[in-house]
Length: 158
Image (cartoon, rainbow, N blue to C red):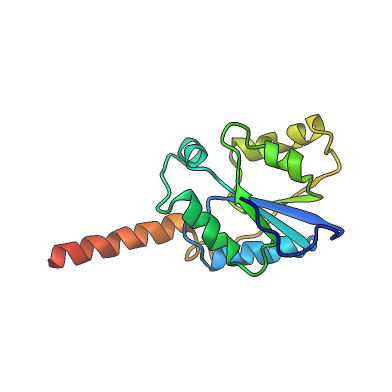
């Protein structure tokens, strides 16, 4: 499912990727930083199967719930669920001018990007690494861990 909030006639398309399981200020800061590189922000939301492979965890929210949450973000012009079998396909389809990686996106897929872009005929696509925004507070894994602690305390109290 794709959502378009404005015309694709914009000059520069910026693409970001992520799980977006718990939308927080860190994600909003990521969208804001990415949007500074262009005027049309595209968000590819990771599929559950790929999250399990890359992060060895399952998201708390379903794919459709995560998609709906990202759709509500004002800076996002287009969002969709990524491809399961070929995570690079969405890049070939969207042909972004810039790919903005989150500060912590240093996994194998990110490392393959320069070569994959060349193979797709997108060697001019620029790759930028975004800066963290209070990662000691706004990181989904930390928020999930805090939530687990709160639930454990509540269940112990009975």
